[in-house]
Length: 214
Image (cartoon, rainbow, N blue to C red; front, top):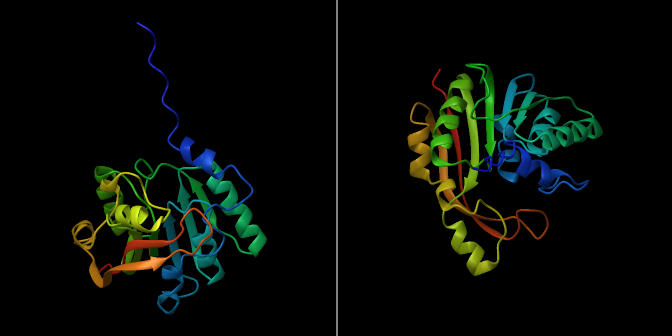
């Protein structure tokens, strides 16, 4: 019997995608996260799981937060650190698989999960870890594609989101995953990602802010 092929390391897909000088999702933070500026407090701590090339973590560091970003891709971590250096800020960038990473508990004032899509079982576990990582009173900011994104890709030629619809999210799903947190705001919306980058065109998203009870 021939030997079984060795599976690629967890970050191989994203390493290949990020192995370019360009920032495939751009260098500017996600508008929904930027819209939370008034909720942020300088000199507090933030965690950005699945931060990719670092655009959201770097923006949070520019707001005066002490930022840790985590991504499965070594190339993403490298580019996040390079972006931070060019923008004159510092952050801790960790290369790790979020499903096996040793998550800190009650360590962060903010967790920002922006377009982090995982298979259902992994998603539920990682979302639970996000909630546990918050200090009492801490905020979770999340934005993700809804299943309607499949129709948007067909109808409008939009680009973005996982190919597997079960990896997308709904309001009901987020309420269930973050049942131990208070809902500050939660909505299903449409947005426009513009015409440049790996997210392009009209998109169906779910956005929310949750708070860990004090």
